[in-house]
Length: 405
Image (cartoon, rainbow, N blue to C red; front, side, top):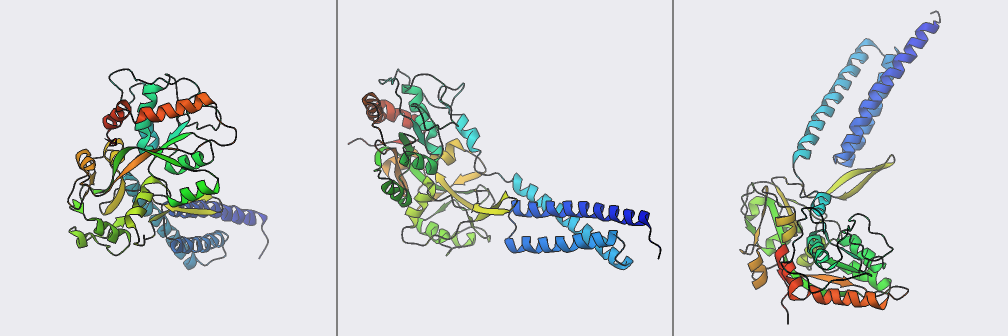
């Protein structure tokens, strides 16, 4: 056989084109599988299959395979492409199933002094008007509407940037969520947070940092569970909840529903609602939460707790105001517990079984003592929150005011 430079170059071009096409196709399939949560063993199998087909495609393009092998290769590539398209369709369907919220959009609606802000207002001037230096605030997502209303009532009118929780200066009003808010308070990067009670891990972190958390109860709220509105189950008992989240109850038919497996979602550790779930479980072991995969970098993927997605067989939990007001959605339904619906009146009279206080939390001074005027402002602010005006804003927002002694 005579050597032909033209034939060699042609084979190289074909091999390169095959490598680029098949390599790009299978890289897309592999990344898509990791993003949409394929089990790890299926992802590894896919990677092996992709590697084999890629090598075969290069060999076929270079003329190193028989015609019959080439046909098998083409069929394999077409089958992989069909699988990719089917799974893309499945991913699009999953994406169409709503999650509970879009956090940033929800928070922006309540920004103090914002145009058309949903933060409630007093009908008369506040009895307290703070001036600089102002306490730096942070807190849970579900409580942002409450302390945004406080700020709107007693802080000077200004723009309080929600997404810039700077460590320096007074008067910052951020909402980083329960986990980060407690961390920032313990580290001395904020002065006052609004949240549910701390988890044991957060108490341990505070003790390790030489901080003592001071909790001032300012209102009451219900811990609620919810399902897809098409789920026929309208209520559960506390013991059934424990059974589901311990893995002892796995099918909705066991609690009066259809013959479908239960998908019980959880939240990230140390969040307010996950801490509430752990308290509810008491000594009953909590099952591992549903996980999802996310690409971390070119080196691999990370696993994290899956956000609630409103599948027909899903079960989720939150606090009542967040689920029923901030992230209100007709496609989910709050469940009665022990036959009692979660409502302001059942929270107030204590008939709903899962009610708890939420708090204004401080942790004392760190390093250089704060100015005396600042300490007076913080003390006056806490006193005002417990005053009739502060409690009125809690009620008008949609929570239940604390009972005064």
